Length: 157
Length: 155
View 1: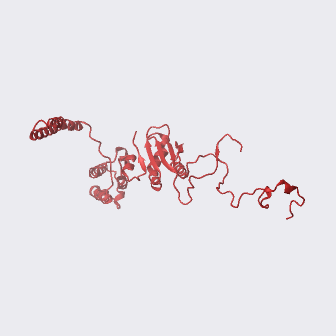
View 2 (view 1 turned 180 degrees about the horizontal axis):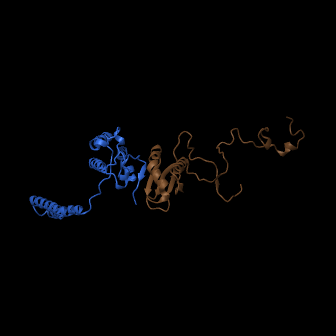
View 3 (view 1 turned 90 degrees about the vertical axis):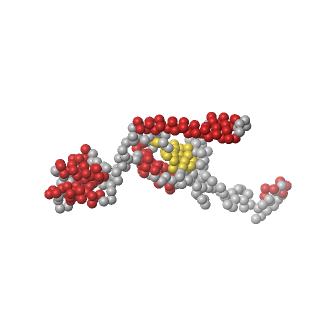
């Protein structure tokens, strides 16, 4: 367990999402863009063309469209576990923005950091983890020293 | 409101008829005051600038037939076999045709595009393009939005 510079976590899912039922983990999307600046062109076109279809196909996500003066167009994604991710969409095409928003919608809110192992299980062993007393006659550990010192020990198998 | 307050205060002292009369007069006075206040408020919008004319244009269903009839009526000897290829070289013909269409359909060919109107086909193409005057956001809001999409206007 080397302590590295960046943080890491184990593979996990939010409340076993996907097993049985799937709940979209994205709670709300806020699109902030300027109505006139050239860097918001992709954002404006996305709002014209694609955002209504996206909202219709994902009824569990609330989409806020805020045209206002801003430093650069951004999309802020808030997840059910409280994670907030802000991505800049300045100077990007409509397809790029659509792909990004699809990606945000399919993510859970878990942090995007190094995952220690690509697998995880709650039951790492079914029949029991091996230890040196497995497959040995039971009571072996309880032998008194007296018996141990008698001739004829250990008893023939 | 003053009349109602005073009638409320004096209700115990004076007989009922008088208090009712007071409240009626009070409300009448209020109505008169409102009526007097209304005309000056109405006068202001008249002085203000009226809203600009809507530039919306929707091509009518029978556009082709209409244009054909006009061209036939006006062209005379210049009529080609297919009315669409009728050249509009004659400035009188071009002016009359475009002026009549503008008056009828409420949509004028802008000056910058007059030189492009060489045949009746060009005129037909121009008049089949619809013009919307609502901004994209107005359209978006007027359209049927799903309940999870919220658009704000703070700019």
